[in-house]
Length: 187
Image 1 (cartoon, rainbow, N blue to C red):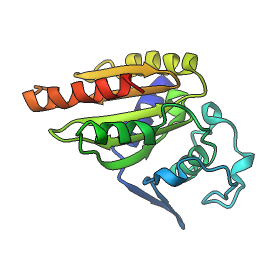
Image 2 (cartoon, helix red, strand yellow):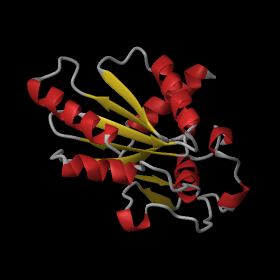
Image 3 (cartoon, rainbow, N blue to C red):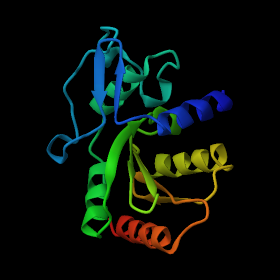
């Protein structure tokens, strides 16, 4: 089970910006004006998203596009959100590109959005129902991905930020990581 979760998470982290499965296309870009959606939607297989279980109970057999859509559709307003966090990074002078949703249920999260920064830095912001759930998500991530060097994990309120730079670390990547940490901790 843990091995499967690690494999799914690694695949999700390497996911492209837009996923296409069957006849459904799921775009990972979420405009700030529509960051939280409450409208019911249908899955790629035609089932109602309201019939699917909570984020921690999504079936491993559920198509990836359906998981992404369910998580995005059932996203609740939290602070700090992925959108707020990446906006804070931009305001701090960090160029954020290639935002990509990844499977939140692997971490027990509601919604996760990754992004790339300058100097080979990468970010993942996962939103949780409560600060306690965010702390549990951090513990799970630390254990599941202990073999990945150079990761910094921080919890602020209902959010878990994971920041990673190049293995060797450069002065530029270290400066960007520090800016990101500082911006996140102010939220």
